[in-house]
Amino acid sequence: MEPEGDPGVLSRRAQREIMESPAPSCLSMNSARSMEPPFDFKREPLTPDLRCSVCSEVLRDPVSIPCGHSYCRQCISTYWVQPGPAGDYVCLQCSKRSRVRPVLCTNPALARLLQGLQQAGFSPALPALGYAGPGDVACDICSGQKLRAVKSCLTCTVSYCESHVRQHYTVPALQRHALAEVTGDGGHKGHQGNAGQTERIKEEETMETEEEERESVSKKMTEVKEEEEDSDEGLSDLKKNPKTKTLISEVKNLSKFYSDLEQENSELKHVVRELSKKNAVLKQEATFEKELVDIRTAALNKITANLISDPQQQREAEYVRRNLKNMTMDYVDVTLDPDTAHPQLILSEDRKQVIFGDVWQDLPDNPERFDISVCVLGKEGFSSGRFYYEVQVKGKTGWSLGVATKSINMKGTIYLNPEDGYWTVMLRNGQYWAGAVPTVPIFLREELQKVGVFVDYKEGQVSFYNVEARSHIHSYTGYTFTEKLYPFFSPGNNYSGKNSTPLVITPVDVTD
Image (cartoon, rainbow, N blue to C red; front, top):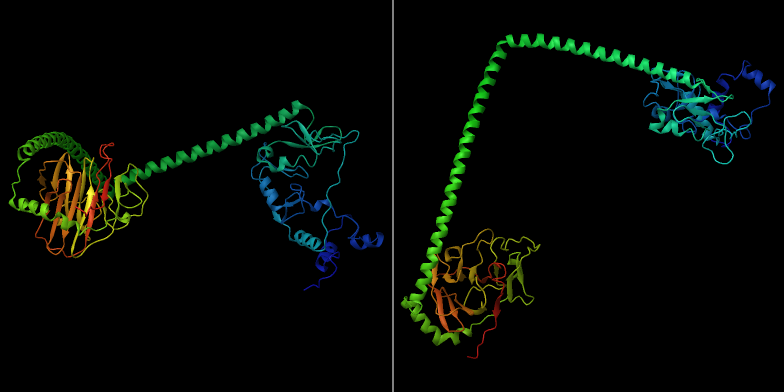
């Protein structure tokens, strides 16, 4: 290890390398020292040759090229990414040209020398600014007092000083321009000032390049022809191979199989088209049958409007008229559960009203939320005793309400019948129905305005009443409940505003 000392003094290694390097003249280093005063590193500037001609900075990772000049490895590699316009590589310091990209030789001695100088606090001097004088070629780019031009671009027809010519070394588009040294007589070193001779040089270079390209293309064509001949010979040998014959036979069989598949596919498409036509006919017939059922149902409503065919319902109706007041004593305060509401249902702030909205709300997909059917459950469930609540349905053209068990399937399409955990009544297309399999039509004398729902958990009974007429609508009896029952509501779709009225859970009047 060499001791650290005054940063203004070179390390011993750096001094040794300077002493061992070739002398700048025929005199030996000892003779030079005997005839000249000692070199003062602190006072005298170091040679600018230690700077890169491309970036003008101190050489970094210095490399030398065959002509002896040195550059930063990165700078000269970037500058020589591709050859110049004449197809050759040019040294920026001596303008020596080479058709082949010169080899970059690492210069470890110079690298150590620079490292020693930098550690000692020295840096190579920048080239002194040289202003153009009499007989000099001035830089065409400088403003004010112009610097002396060092290069002329034959492409731009402009002369540049040391500073302004740098872009021709670093900008890819400018690197292809032809640069020439400026001489004292206004001519170009390596190029004559005569424009005609310059053009001839360019033409000769172009002809050489074209000749090389023609030779390259001819060589490639010869290689391709030889490869084709080799391929033909190889193909002939391959066809004679028994394995190849077997493979060709298998390919033919596969081709026939594919052709058969195409034929079957065409026939299947024809069958699908025929089935689609039949399906359309069946849909028309189904629509006709539905219209016929609606006509028959309407006629049946008129005929049986004043009849109650079921003696059990007749007895229950009489029971309602006598005991409706007692049922209202089992009134419970029902509110809607937003966690179960379909994303298109809109609940009021007090959770007493629900309508169908046109916008799908961004709500969490809870396991207990309806995702297809537009339904919602009550917040509280009941597993004993009796309970009663009332719902206003006035002005609506479609709705469903009743009770449902806790274990119902809330995802996908639901079926409103006791077997699936629903005890409901509903309005569809002007007809009232009881949710069963099959659905049971309900014939009423008057249009419902408000519906009362009564549940006797112990007796297994769910009943519905016309609150305004104080009459019985429908009852489910004889069931055994084993889990909680929740109030169930569905306001139905909006149907372009025809069913936009909300379902409303109303207070129960217990004074009658």
